[in-house]
Length: 278
Image: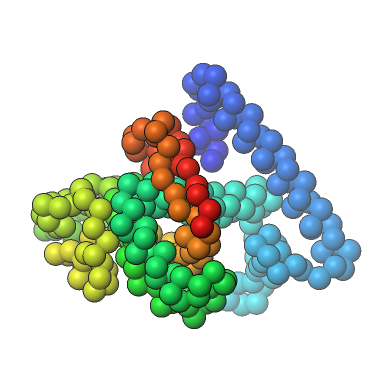
């Protein structure tokens, strides 16, 4: 965030000035919320069971291996964590649902199959957690959308020690970029139909969807895999089910299919969609 702030100052274009202004407004609001919560805690109020409360509680109870108090996160670091959780936890799921509605508008046969599955499980009643876990077609659709349009198109990793990868030895401190979008569209891995929307490729799960079981990684992989993966998929499934239960939808004539990556992969000109109640 501080690097981005510096970059915005170095290139004072109209958009960068606006981004800088918005960032300052967000930080001012968050600092006020943090200060108010810390004052409440100091006055004896119990810690609230939310992200900010957990961060501040951890900050106040940080101890080392000898039981001695250690310096926790600064207010700025707590603020950055709040920004990251909101951005990573809300924006990505929103973009996933947007692409899903676009794709299901382009492929009404899959929209019908998904709706039939949802209505078959719960009718127009709220789908409970057990029912969500039984959604096979909806899950396949979401996986295929994540393959074709992963919100995060690239992941970056850094070697923390000397390591050999693919027969080449790299020292510590080397930055690697993992091109998620490219790998998700690699014909050698997925086949000649790689650019087609085919949820059926996930019919037997992720590991059997391609020639390489590790080729699908919209949430990252390894020890730093997205901690919100299961929640994001649950949230997306429930939101999509509620939409399918109530509406049929199609793309408006003004829609232009232009995937565009600015931080995340999104439709450049938005997603005008017509909804019809059912």
